[in-house]
Length: 269
Ligand code: SIN
Ligand code: MN
Image (spheres, rainbow, N blue to C red):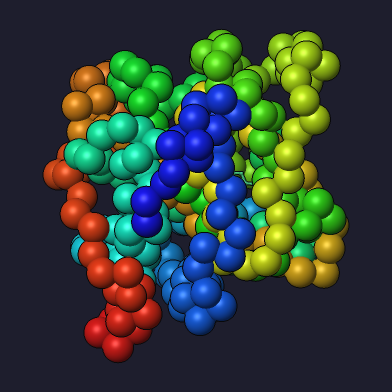
């Protein structure tokens, strides 16, 4: 999928692009069913929350091996609608996935993600430059009520903020603190919602501030995330590196597959 020069300029200016219904209902149903299948597996790379221990975040669905491997996620990550879009916004054809995850925010019980920049964590993984972007796909219709993602337009241009370790959330992460966030929200246009129909996607820069609230609705809010880095920006060695499922060591440049590979994966999985 080729972007226009205007779209690339818009990504540079705002730090994101939104693609309504990028995946068809049939494709999205495959991704959702695969996420449901994987969520039943007992694996180190699946994080759970609440009394019912519902899956909250699960990683490494895109590789050909490992307990959470899914041929549908592997195909989606290499689709021209995902990989080709990431290649264009990052201006480099040699990309790999730093990680791939599905965040599952269960109806009523699914909790918030605080304001953060992805590069807050990824710099600590040993990655030198913010030459990274994430393509998120809605697996359910998402609304503000169900805890859709919010993006602070243009905030990536200020660069990386010093993060703090937020251990209050179900999936602990490096977040940006309230003082810095209040200041930024006052200075920027209102945050935009990544809402709408399942299959809708957004690609956003790794320094773009983003967050999402509690799911107050009766509908689940599941979303898939493909987090791309350029091969030349792969992480340097760090002490106590995070596990491979979140800080991938597979730096082989990814190749695009046919646009219908996701649906075709159903017959071969
Ligand atoms: C994230 O930014 O990693 C998760 C946000 C969300 O799924 O709402
Ligand atoms: Mn994030």
